[in-house]
Length: 124
Image (cartoon, rainbow, N blue to C red):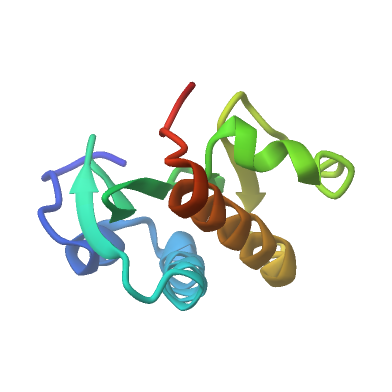
């Protein structure tokens, strides 16, 4: 996204491309539901949720939303992610398709459990 750097998640969503705004709000709500005690912040210019460590991040782009739960948190869900473009630590969701709410929730809950039980780092 171009323009002024957001300092709050609300500002980030408001400044996002119009097609992204609803999906950003939706993933934000899902992640806050999965990790209700996590603190929201802007890091590297993107929204993150953290609980001692960064749990996950998400970002708006021209045609898609990136969800960044880390590669290790994605690994148990590789078969479920087969239909999505993924990177080492990211999953892309196109704006013209509904978010896979249950899958995002499962990945987020898995990541939260890994951090709480094993102190999993953002990247390792």
